Picture 1 (cartoon, rainbow, N blue to C red):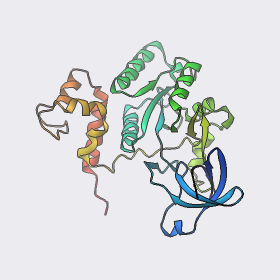
Picture 2: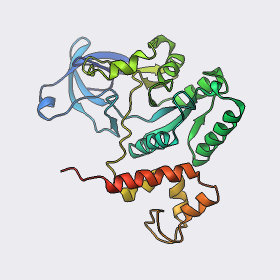
Picture 3: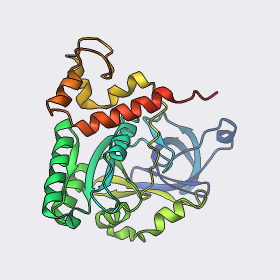
Picture 4: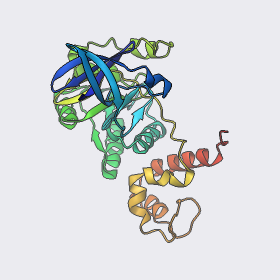
Length: 294
C-alpha cells in the first residue's frame, strides 16, 4: 500500500502523485456507500494493481476543504481584489477574509487594476492596503499591472504550500493565474461562465506546480457564506479585534453595546479601520438574525 496526494480528478479518475510518480486510480465502490468523495488535495492510501493504475483505499483526515472548487488541505488563498471595475467592496473583502479564517486558510490580498487609478485613488488604496497589512495580512499592491516584482513576491509566498485563487467575477483571477503559470493559458472570461452552467461534473480540477508550491487551476471559490458560525464567535475571525479584546472590560465582549470595549475605542482612535468594524456589525447582525435551519 502506498500514500500519495491527489493532484487531479476527472470523470471518476484520480491522478495520485507519490514519490514523484503519477498513478491513475479509481475510488473503491464502498466510498459511495459511505458518502465519501475523494478531493484534489486529499492525502490517500492507494494500491497499485496494474503498472501505474490502482485503487484508492482510504482518504486520510483533511485539515479543511472547499466546495467550489472541490479541493482539500488548502494552505492559503490569494484574494484577488479589484480596486475598480468592478468597484472595490470592503464588505466583500472582509467576508472573504472571514470565510478563510473560519476554514483555517491563510489569506494573501492581491489588489488588481491598480494601474487604472488616478493619483488620488491610488493614494487612498495604498492607505487601505496598509490598513490590512497592519492587521497582519500579506498584501500585494502592484504599481503596474502584473509587474515582475509583484509576481515574484507572490511566487515566493507560494513555496511549499497548496494555494487557491479567489475573488469576484471580473477582478482578474484568470489573468493573474495566466501570469503565474503561463503554461495554463486559461481563456479569461470563459471560466466563470463555464462554472455557472451546471458543468461541474466534467470540469477538471487540478493542482499545478508553480515555484515549489501548488496552485489549483480553477479560479473558483465563491463560498463566502460565513454564516455557519455562532454570532458570538465572529469576533475570533477578526485578528485585530482578538488582539484588542484582551483589554475589553468584559470577557466575551462582542464589541457591540458593551461599555469599556477596547475594540470600539481603537476604532475611534483610528487604530482599527472603521470599515472593518462596520462590516463586522453587518455580518454580526445577519448571523444573529438568521433563521435556524431544521
